Image (tube, rainbow, N blue to C red; front, side, top):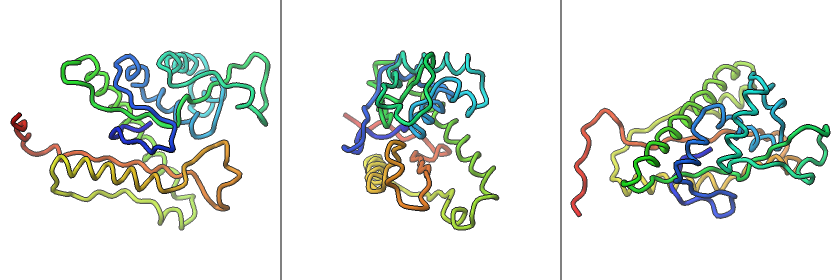
Length: 215
């Protein structure tokens, strides 16, 4: 679940989304969490996901259908379920893509612009929940992991072009590290854990809005 500039890692399975209907299908914190869990742990059912989220299977099923309607998830196939305990009537879902990238829609598409804002608000809520979740559990984690994590920010003075380049550079930096893939966990180095590398880049809101550049 990433709101990022449209310059995805070419090795990743992702697409840039601007359509209002798709963005609205994603614009809900629980839906984004469900999608994230499918990407993190692989295919699952509504019942299994409900247990992880402390929600009812009926509610999770509703949100899974909404995600499927937006094309974010699809039915898992037999090859996706090798090694899993599968019951005949269970419906298994999997993420359709590894990443969700969005781009600003055209200025004349107000519906898409509003949907984009709703989606970003939901993403921010999930990021905040994830960060709070780490704060809640970090006291019981080994010291080396607590020392390796960070919540940091650096005030910079940049142009819009420089800000965009900063985002691109950060995405390129992340692309140089091992991507988590639940299907190949056995090949990961001993002692490795899933790390949430989330970042935000935006103008400091408490300042005067700049004038639009002249055409």
